[in-house]
Image 1 (cartoon, rainbow, N blue to C red):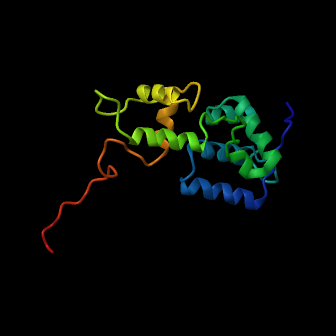
Image 2: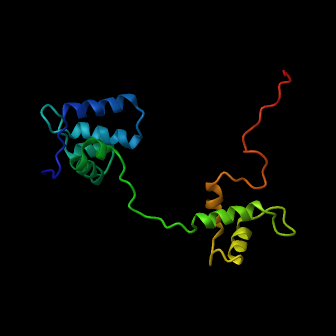
Length: 167
């Protein structure tokens, strides 16, 4: 079976891949892909393993091998080893001003009869104030987690050292 994408490594690329493997600092996926490239190498003196041999040796599926070969063909070693960036785009539920209002609300006094704000109560109150038409408690949690605010807690959460008494 002829391969659509042939892997022909340069001497420098082989050295880069061997160095990556010898250091062992790369992710397991990158190491597997590096091994696939080294064994699939069809340049002079390369092992030129078939897809079937690669599948058996590295316990991966044929689509994985074909993807590594294609990415190598498109962008050489860096493209073959790395993950493609996500093509998904995420809309933000709140803009910066709305996030600031939410943080200000949670830093204020909780409702009467409560010791602190719950996420559901916070989201409900935020909608009642007319900042947004709807807001889930999960969105409120993500906004609050993104900041450095920790309402209801003293300090930053880090342990403080006890005074040694040696002044």
